[in-house]
Image 1: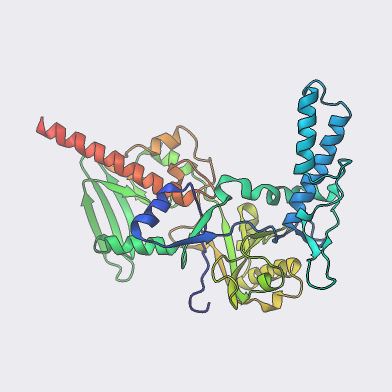
Image 2: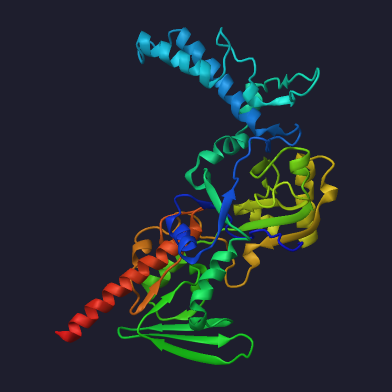
Length: 415
């Protein structure tokens, strides 16, 4: 991409309640900017045979139709046993405002759903969008777009580090540079009551070394740890084996910012019933000439199939999704980059499938294995959308456990 442009192939969002990561940003001086995770001008295309809908229309037409239906039920005395007369009137008044109903409590459309023509100078009067039929809005592929920005992990206010999520890692590395050994591939782990021993290979030279320490914290993703030579024991091995890696892919493009200049979409996500799943518009460099558009972000089984295709096929699929949502613009996409997390060395997945690591395995892995502790996103309560913060919480939790253990050991020696 052009200098200054980037995309986050991994984590990309910081909700306001991710206190650990936000705390690191504050302590390390990593500048943040607002990430626009929801734009009502973005699009949803639950049916590829139908044109895309503005999210503002999908949301507000749904509210309007449902408010009208509920108003009819109240007027028809269907709620006599649930609400007294005063409460029924209060609910009717609420629904009139919430659904933007007319005086007869009918939904005939709303300015909240947007305009096909905005007000302008001279005789340019605004033209309000006609409502979409409720039947079309009940498409199950539209359910997530209607509530996505209400989910705590994806609701405002959200942030991103200026210049990319790796600015956090770079700032942290700058503080501990002299303690870090890069290009070190772990070969074996041996843990005991007095120490922990790690055998590792320097990837460039091939030289093998052995490190022995009073304590070790192992943050290798659990599915990869299962393949590392270790002496953790059968119970630990069985618990590690419970952790199932998820899958995820992203495709990003550099392009002229047609989504802003022609569609008035500044940040946010568009949703499509296609293997690409969504388009993610950039929140940085707003209103500039070029931007990085994420044209695919899929997870789960769709991601598994997607990742088996060639890079050229993945890029072609992403172009197809962009063209469906923004007809005539796929040809403007340049410099496509596809990232399949199942193929990223020393990771091989974006996160652990949420809540697969069940009890008693979860509690067992949160306990020390001799003088070795495990830490990862799988060992803190979280899931999709919280995995980065969960990993940091897990690490901090382990540091606290080691500090208490070391203090107890010191007291024992003193006694």
